[in-house]
Length: 597
Figure 1: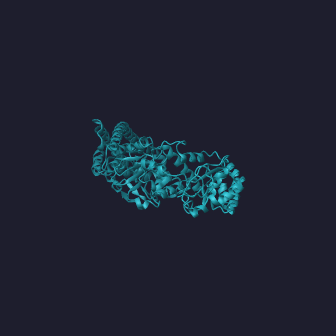
Figure 2: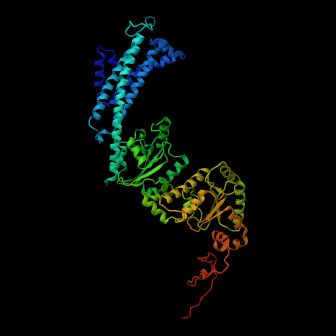
Figure 3: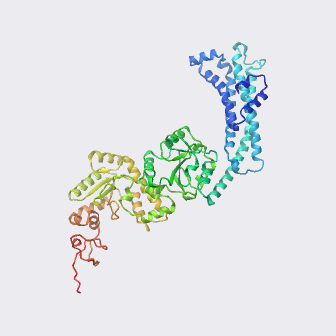
């Protein structure tokens, strides 16, 4: 291209020669390549001119290359800079048109033809302007300073005539660009409307597999639109064929590091994942908040996508507006991370699976809305539901015969007092593990309590990271159950979780055993009342356990004996055990009944 500037051909013929040279490229690529050729000349001059007054090396290079003084030719370079900015804007518009999936829809008659005609004209004048500018900048070297006068119009390369020629070219290109911008915008609107309608219809129609849906969403511009972790290899849509696909839609920042690690554990590091990893995959779809990706967002995306074990869009900044708008409208994406589930045929089975994945991880496979209902039908209110995956050592490693207590408070003195009372309880033989789980609001007070618990060895405590995950888990439980249209009147688990999240009790504790539904929640005042009845619960605890001892101690005493009875076959071992009444939850008195034959 540079050679075309020094031949005997006129500008028109040189321009046509450049078009012939770039014939195999897209129109935006033709213009970018031509602009790059100009940048090799203009950029060098501009950098030297900008630096020669402060940098001795730049001054020496300017002398060797015979680059004139900056003050003399600054107006030319200012005009050239304005021209370049205008050309860049037009190239962006051309690129937007080239990226439109117009081959997949039918636009109004003449719309595409008219737009392409304007692109051809704009391309001609941009490349012609580039050739003229290259010649102009190059010829500046041949002009001696004493031969140039700012007001001289005699020399064809005088400053005034050069600036006039540049401004004229810029005005010509800008006028064409104004028409092109309007025309491309019309093409975008028509394409968006038709593609949106086509995508909606595609989801409604039965599909053989998920390939058509995924290709429509992500693969219209690229045959290999995906990447997988640090492998960096280009991956095609076909790698997700016959799988359940979880579309993880989020901002480029995705999640805080602690939540991100937990999500990886729930999905890919989960013990059950190895049994179903051939059946589902996660595809991360980051969407910029502003619509225009910043350098920082690109850096964050590259870092995360190279580290996480799932698939991601290889160039998310190139996602079609149709896909982005569909995610926002149909899947209700509002910048908070969302997980949309497609079954192997591409049918959407859940537009909000994130809560169930946070709660159960791979156990919730295939992550459909019906599976969420099924999971809750069998779920129980117990310590495992509260702590599963938050801290694997609790209650997973706690023996079934030991009771686990989790507690929360924002008062350090109360925590110290409670820990001393727990140790006294343990000295009486209570098999008890105690864990501090903080409060919903992680204030400075909570952070100080965690630090004091560790230093003073008051009890076990979740780390600040796991405390955050514990409360996030409760939020997920609440949202998931409410999504099933349950209420506190109809669902016991929802009632208990909301009581914790409402944080009405300043100090609280829950006692239970791993998967057992025999679970007791107390406020600080109820705990004090329990301790005041030591004579009663100290007698009951060895026979019925801590949880029932707490419950019986706090229940009002019966004014009349319970009349409930149960008859069972004689068993010597049963006679030695304490039997709890199913009605009043108190120890039953035993009698032996003889049957007359």
